[in-house]
Image (cartoon, rainbow, N blue to C red):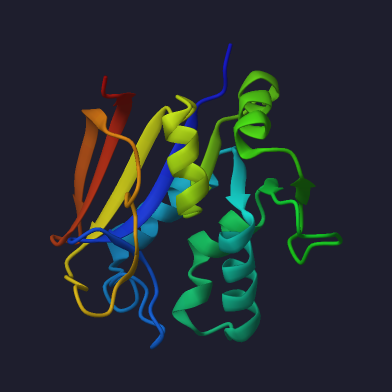
Length: 194
């Protein structure tokens, strides 16, 4: 049996998934209500393995290092995510990593995730890692795309369009929920459009 792989991403309504130079990250900061926080905490409370690309991993480590215990960066679900076992796909990072249970896999991401899907006894999840996950989707390795859409448009300040340069996909909606009356979570099963 193959482990399920979920590409979990935060997005502005206009499809941006990363923070800009002023530090605003796709509308999340200041928009995370109690339902969203409880849902994320429960989601990351499940047994699973995280998979990160090097750039996203570096960003998480830097954000956490620069934050305080009281900051939004350390929401309880982020702390729980940080304590899950993780595989970091990178040919440039070297250990030890500033993450409790992380290992480096220096092979190609497609090979790493294909192997993890065969060997992992728990589901796999990647939060962020846009270019890596676009490649994994094109290779047919992503089982679910979980998009959390925050009620913002970041047309002038948004960076990193989530699916820029991606292949074409048909999406089957398998789950949806509204959190705090304003944030949408959509979970899709992607199929490469031929």
